[in-house]
Length: 450
Ligand code: GCO
Image (cartoon, rainbow, N blue to C red; front, side, top):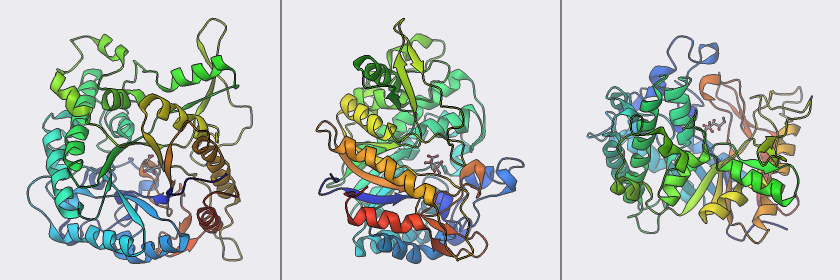
C-alpha cells in the first residue's frame, strides 16, 4: 500500500512563527508584534521579532526542503508586510519577499500552498475592531485581490484562514492569543459571522484565478470509535460534527457547516434574536462559495462509544498514557477516522495541512538530534492516513508536516519544538533531525514502507 500517484508531500509553517524581520523593509505592525510584547503574554517573555530569521534565510530554507524531497510547501503571508496599514498602500519590498520565495519554490519543483491569514492581522485593522467590525470582510477581500494580482499567476492552491476556531476562540474568547481580548457571547457570535463572510469574500476572489483551488484550514477535535461496532462508529461521527453551545467557536461544525452546507448547525439558531447577528440569505450564499478541498490540521483526538442510554461516552486515556511536550495525547487512529468522516459529510478531497509533535529535542553529544519519538509519531499517523487513502471511500490529496523547522509556538514561545529541523535560536543555525531523514525516505517511497 502507498499513497496516490499525485499525492502532495509537504511541510508547513506560518509567517509570524518563522520570519522575524519585524520592522524590516517597510513592514507594518501586526497584532502578534504588539501582543507578544505585552507583559506576561508569552512564556519567558519571548516574542517573534527574530523567530527563525527566515526573512533572511529563505533561500537556505528552500534548499533544506529540496533536500527533504517534498513537492509542496504550505506557508502564510504576513499581511502587514504587503499592506502595512491593512488596506490601501502596497509595500513593494515586502511583497517581493514572497515573489522570491514563490519563484525559488517553483524552480525546485515545490508547489506553493498559500495561507492568506495565519493569525497576524495588521494592527491598524485591529484598532478598528478586527473581526468584531463587519467591515473586516471588505478589508479581507481587498487583501485577497492584492494576493491574486501579485501571486495568482504562479500560485494555484490557497487557504483563506488558518484555524478560525483558534483565531476567535484563543484570540477573542479566552484571550490567550493576539489580540488577547475576552468578548461577550453576543460579540463572539458576530465575530464568527464576520469571519465567515471574510472567508467567503476572499474565496470568491481567489476562485477567479485560473486553475485555482481554494479552501480554509480547520482544526477542532475529531473523534474515533472505541470499537468497530456500528453504533460506536455512528457515535464518533455524530460527536465529530456536534455543536457546542457554551463554546460556539470551538468545533469543526461551527465553520464547516455554513461553509460547506450553507447553514449554521441547527443548535446555533437556538441562541435567539437577542444574541445572534443579522444573517441574510445573501450572507449564507457568500459564505458557502464552493470550495475545492477540506484542509484539516490534526494533532490529537478522542475516542468515544455509544452508551446504553443512547448518549455518547468518552474513553478516558489510560493512566500513564503518553503525552507530547504540549500535553497532547498521541492518537494516530484519528488520522484514519477524521478524514474519513469529513469526506463522508462534505464530499471534498482532504488535505492534512498540519500534523506533528513537540518534543524536548536537543543536540546529543554526537552532534545530532535523535528524535526517535517523532519518527514513530510520523510513521504511525501516516500509516492510519494511508489506510484512509486506500479504503475506497475517502479521497486524501496531501500531507503537510508541522513543521519544517522549530519555531515560535505562539503563547508557548520557543520551548515547543515541532520541527523536522532543529533551530538554534541564538545563532539561527539549522540542523536536520533524524526525523528529517526519515521523512525524506517516506516521501521517496510514497509511504510504501511505513
Ligand atoms: C496551530 C497553528 C500552528 C501551530 C501548530 C502547533 O495549529 O495552532 O496552525 O501555527 O504552531 O498547530 O500548535
